[in-house]
Length: 152
Image 1 (spheres, rainbow, N blue to C red):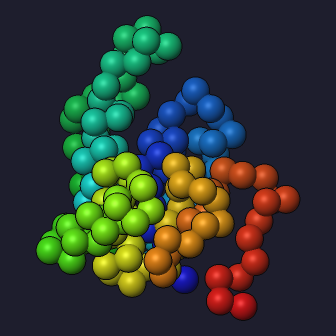
Image 2: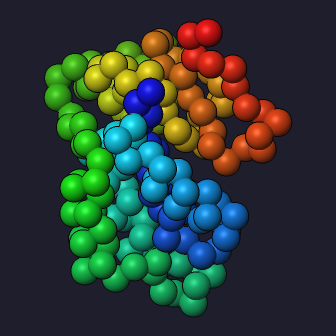
């Protein structure tokens, strides 16, 4: 089953501040080649997040701008990328109103909704909730919180 990847999964892969999330993100991204889809929005947010100076890293960023550009290019070659279009915009506007999502979350959800991707991997939504035809799974929760199959 195809799953849309939220930005945090991409960032955790390179963030040493939470080793457990870093290991899980690395495994999910490695094992998900062929099943994971990356939205254009996540690539933009990834670049911003990994190049921003972080106080708890002494003002250093997770990556240099050059390394971040190379990583975004590599992500584009490893995973299918979905791009914004009129259907994504219309879905995002609908999601923001109907579900009360923030603009960025509504836009992320809209990529999945408009492109027929049944699942989003994200910790920023309610785990297990369906938004339209899309179910959200937080891959960082314990296995105890695992969901049943999408359409049993």
